[in-house]
Length: 68
Image (cartoon, rainbow, N blue to C red; front, side, top):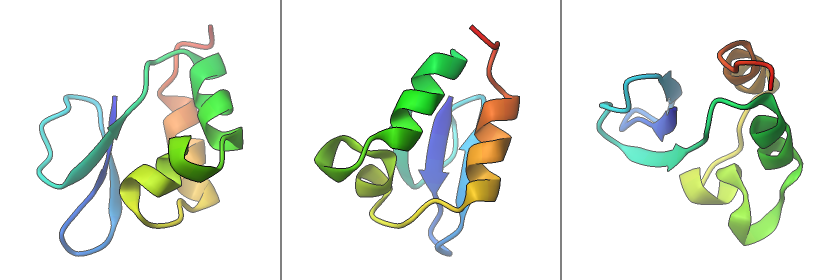
């Protein structure tokens, strides 16, 4: 899945990976998402998007995982 910072400054979760904007990519495993949420610094999603990610976005991302 792609997490995209759109031109208007909002963040979208794009299952089809076709949104235009600044993208970071995650696999659909819950363990990958949880690891990404804990990661800070240059390897973190917030760094990749160049903006903070609200908890509600993380919740949406977790709902899209396959619980592996």
